[in-house]
Amino acid sequence: MDGFDLAEERKKGILTRAPEIPRDCMKVINQERILVRSSNQEQFYSVNTVLNECDCKDFPRIGLCKHLAAVWHYFGGGKHSAPTAQLHPTAPDLHHT
Ligand SMILES: [Zn+2]
Image (cartoon, rainbow, N blue to C red; front, top):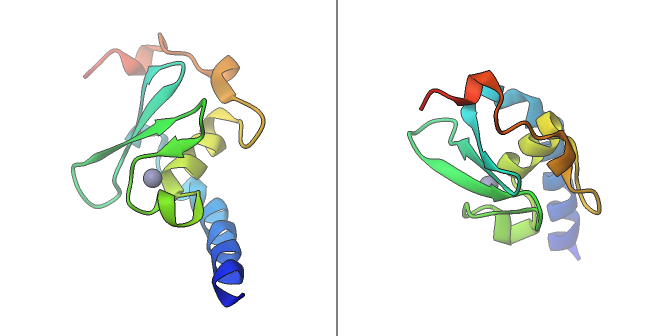
């Protein structure tokens, strides 16, 4: 199944490049939702940290995307471990809008 292998390779690449998304591009809404700004346009994607889902068009293809990977990178978590304990919705850098 070439498709499966390609998906696995793509996932690896996404996880490897997760740190490339700046922390500044993320906006914590609450313990289960973080917005991640698109890298090249003024658009935010909504990442659900409980379900580990993102609403961008890439996510449904392989069940992973750079936004979700970046959230894991900065806030911890991943499959089977919700990152909510490490979120700080009241952190000073989140007050400005
Ligand atoms: Zn996404």
